[in-house]
Amino acid sequence: MRIDFQASRRSTVGAEWELALVDRRSGELRSVAEELLAAVRPEGKAEHPRIKQELLLNTIEVVSGVCRTVGEVKHDLDEALDEVHRVADPLGVELFSAGSHPFSSWYRQKVTDKERYAKLIDRTQWWGRQMLIYGVHVHVGLDHRDKVLPVLDGLLRYAPHLQALSASSPYWSGEDTGYASNRALMFQQLPTAGLPFQFREWAELEGYVEDMFTTGVIDHFSEIRWDIRPAPHFGTIEMRVCDGLPTLQEVGAISALTQCLVDDFSARLDKGETLPVLPPWHVQENKWRAARYGLDAIVILDAAGRERLVTEDLAELLDRLEPVARRLDCVRELRDVENILRVGASYQRQRAVAKQYNGSLKAVVAALVTEMRDGVPHA
Image 1 (cartoon, rainbow, N blue to C red):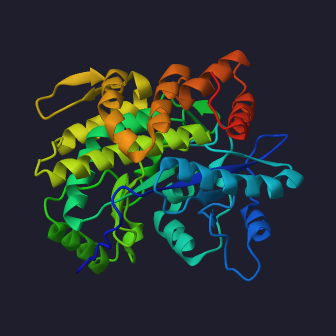
Image 2 (image 1 turned 45 degrees about the vertical axis):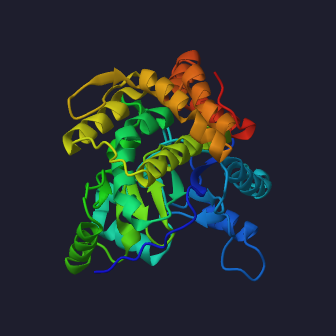
């Protein structure tokens, strides 16, 4: 099977941000996505160009265009968010984004009436219905197909860093799971989800996809739901590691870090370098550590088994990437990663709110709603 990669302008960037819809008074999820989407749909159009449908009726997704800078991405998302708020406010509906809802029950949620979603639920059954989770996806453009797999492998080295920074799903059905990102381990239960295979040649990827079609595992390339995957029709590498991020500032920070990493890898490949690769078993262990411990995770750095606290490695990484950020005009957004380290990742902030309010998860949802309204994380 031939898979054509539509090469795009190098290091262009875009983001997709999944948002939960909750009742203003109770904090419970509300299945009103169809009503909101109908209200924002431009006249004569099938859908809004920046506000999209998702698997569950308690969820919508806002997306940016293909942008040159992360600042442009944030502008697109902010405009879409304002449009949603204008129609949600009269309905008593608020928005938030986190890896999961702290207390709403998965079995009460309604699935969007669409064939591909029905097929997913029919196949995956209990696990598919459990997918009460939200994420952020960042696309970065690559100018040549031969860069795709090396860049994917390079990003796997930093997947735990991105997961730890974005971890925002400590609660599930009203209980503290003990994990920073319960979403990371929930989502990988779906077929073709989880960590990607590490292919050496594009033909190996084509062979894998052909096998998946032949055996009926997938009907479309997009049904490969890896944490990091190629998006051949966009000409991008798509980073899907992250939990839902509560604030626009955090979406910008994660987008900038991803864009800088991909651009750095791309430039190094242009110079003829070979990017370092972690063995798959180290990649798998790092994912679990970041999901369990978040910013307290000690990650494996290389095939020799050297280890380091993820926050220490991030501090050095940010310094190293600053020249890249200057070239991409995202220095401020990249440095917003330091703000996450300073005020804490969302899982830490959620637990702090619960502790302050005697374990109230309703207070946690209210805090997430306020953060989204304000656009910045609260210490």
